[in-house]
Image (tube, rainbow, N blue to C red; front, side, top):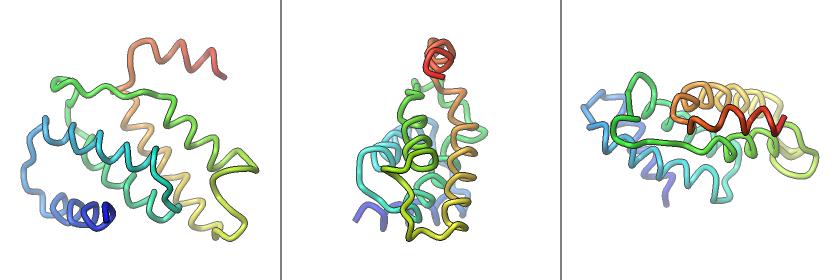
Length: 127
């Protein structure tokens, strides 16, 4: 189970062992695939978002080629918090939905430095 390994990675990061930038970038990409492309519930997404945020914060990963697309972040935010069809269900507690929104916004804030240079124009065109 991928989430078991996410838990192990979380513990590893909490111990503050050094991880090279290249490995951080690779782990970030793998975690983003899990976040965007696999069906996970909100609690699992929160866990993955926390790990990704820890991997990319305060590190200049663009030197090792980390470049992120903005659209998957936008689609996740839109489908989970601004759509009646997808994302959060009626069964999800408001506190979980609030925590999810907070962690997602925090992740986007850290990830935006890795968006492509053309992203700003694309985002404005979308909005």
